[in-house]
Amino acid sequence: MRKILMLLSVLALIVALGGPLLVGMQLEKTTLESREQLTSGLPPWVELIGLDYERGWFGAVSEYRFLVSDNAPPQVKQLIGAFGGFGDQPSLIVANAIQHGPLVGFLRPAIAKAESVFALDTGSNGVIQLPAQTMTHIGLTGTLQVDWRAAGASMVNENGQAIRWADLEGRLSVRPDLSEIHAEIRTPMLQAITPEGATALDIEGLDLSAQTETGSANTALQVDYTFRNRIAESAQMIAGDFALENLNNAALPGLHRMIDEARTRVAPITPRDLVAAHLTTLQTALSNTPEIVWQQSQIGDAGAIESDLAVTLAPARQPATNDIDAFTDHLVTDMQATLNISAPIASVEDLAATSNLVTTVRGMGMLEKDAEAGLYKMRMTYADGTAIVNGLPVPVMPKNR
Image (cartoon, rainbow, N blue to C red; front, top):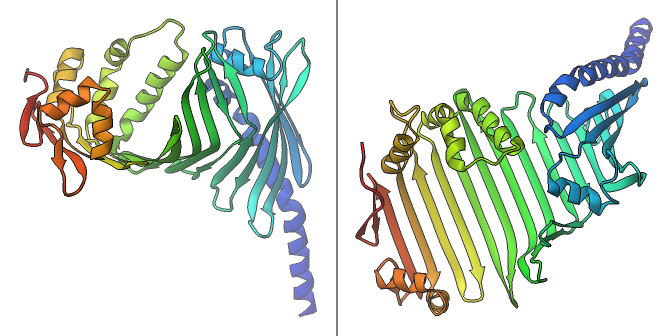
């Protein structure tokens, strides 16, 4: 019995001492091998110019350095300038302190944990520590979780428009097989200020979350949000959720390329030209009949404005591959949709006093007054290119097949 206990003790010691070393070696190998993948995902105005990794027995330290070129978008230059000036060849420094297992922590065991801090080398203005940090957690099942925080800041564009935000925090969770990705972001304050100093947007308590789930054939997206929108002396509480179902997985690489092209393109491109360049990808995305559902509640002093929208997009028919007009005609005429809106009578009448559009819509019968419920209501169905609003047909576009 004593020999068995001694053997078990020796095995436990080998695991305790050798396990972290093996895990650390694998983490180092993965980090260094991921350099090419990381570089390919960067925008053209960012270059990875340094990757240092120093492994210890139970942990490691690493440092990434990203050079920001003078071709960076104005918003990026403004953000860097807000922390001390764009300077000459600024670079972002990401320093990581890593703990690795095979088992790290007791209350929340993990394979590895890392704390990252950020600094900005502005060139001529020296190195500035940024008020941001992340905590990365790799669970025992391989799930990646990143919690991050950043201090409030503001930036002004070349037209004098300003954006201000308070402390930001969020979380990103990714399953090992990428079948589920969840992201959250929260801030107590977000404002947009006009060049004249007027407040164009004033949001409090923003809480936004998004999740994608990828199955064998389709991907689903779910977005939930809540915030308070301040208007003059009043405030509206807004809450909603958006869902996209049945997006064909085969279209995802093409959609990513489409987004990257729009994001990194130097010369401007119109939405029509962008769609025309990626018609095959968009047709693939529609092939499994995607569905969109959007619900929102807007609560103000006069009551709640409720809305819900459901849209079913029909699979793209051939031959429309190279004909954007045929594609958009099909998209509009073959989809189906329902929309329901209800709003307090007082809110609609206040809007009608200052908006000719609301007055016209109400006069056409598209808003029905329910005096007993104290609401104006709109019920719309759409199919075959025609909308039916509160029982009245409203042609949207001629059928052209």
